[in-house]
Amino acid sequence: MDSIHKISKTIVPMMQILLEDGTLNGNPMPKLGKEQIIEIYKTMVLCKIFDDITVKLQRQGRVGPYVTIRGQEASQVAASFAMDDKDWMFPSYRESAALIARKMPLRNLYLYWMGDERYAGDAANGNNFPVAIPVSTQIPHAVGVAFGAKIKGDRIASLVFFGDGATSRGDFHEAMNFAGLFKLPVVFVCQNNQWAISVPRNRQTASETIAQKAIAYGFEGIQVDGNDIFAIYKVVKDALEKAKNGGGPTLIECLTYRLSDHSTADDAKKYRSQEEVESWKKKDPIDRLRLFIEKNGIWSAKDEEQLLSECEGKINAAIKEAEAFESPKFEDLFKHTFAEMPWFLKEELDELKQVYDGKEPEMTNKVEKIEGSFP
Image (cartoon, rainbow, N blue to C red; front, side, top):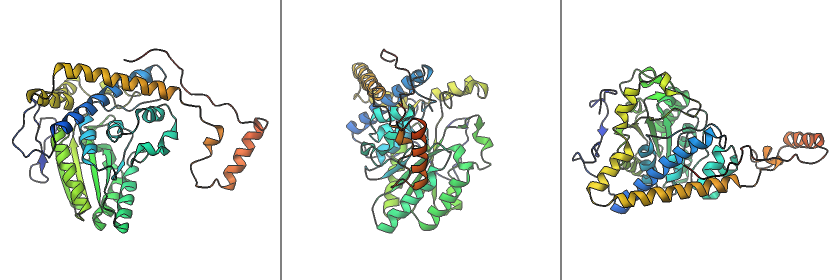
């Protein structure tokens, strides 16, 4: 693909279909109709605008620390579109685009970034597990659900997202070993964005690829151009079907790049060059797909203008709804961990109520309301 990351063509296969100029390289296309391709494009643009606006909201103190997704829209959106609604998705903190693609209400996503965890139990979120903040802890969870599905005979699969840094954690290796041993219906999607915060990929592992790590655990690993929606969709779709048909797990390494900072608490200029960033901007997944649909006569400048307006309207409405959401109750601090509140939590709750003379303290929103629309 490029000089930044050399790809092994002997250890694991590499899949690419859509080139940077919006043309196809001759590899077989996945079964996607024009409407589906346009829907994927619209979703990626929505995710990009969501990302841009949320960074601005964080700078204004209206959301907490935020983890950016810019540059990784294709890896998340295309993989999510390949899933069935009944499949389970396990996100890390960087999967806002995957959650949007999986139809999580934008309001719920904003509630999460505003620090309100009540979003997690909303049935409207679909078969998406809550966001995992500790690196790699969601990977064993995905394997556990896949194990349960196999025991019950349910024809479903679980898909888990994680970054290249997560492959240095024990959770990753334990989950891979268990999944390979029992041939579980799980798909591991590593978004190799080249940097684990400030640690480059070549300081994470001596392996030539991340995908080849699957070989040690007895199942298939494959690399894919992580900025190519066609390649990602095809590889993930095939892996999910294989998993549901008893073929076991697959490790997919999406070669992509984080174009922005690791998070709103990071300054990537301190550890990577602008030349590197600019070289990856030329591989932008949204620009690449737009070139393809324009060249094939299914998208126009007028369509683009209308889409941008619609996306901004949806996001502004979601922000307004999230900021107007009712304040949490004091008891919520003690709920939702156990099916029935245990005695020691009840004692703590009673003690705190006594501090406030038997009344619950008033809880208010943690962010200041600032009038105006965005961007």
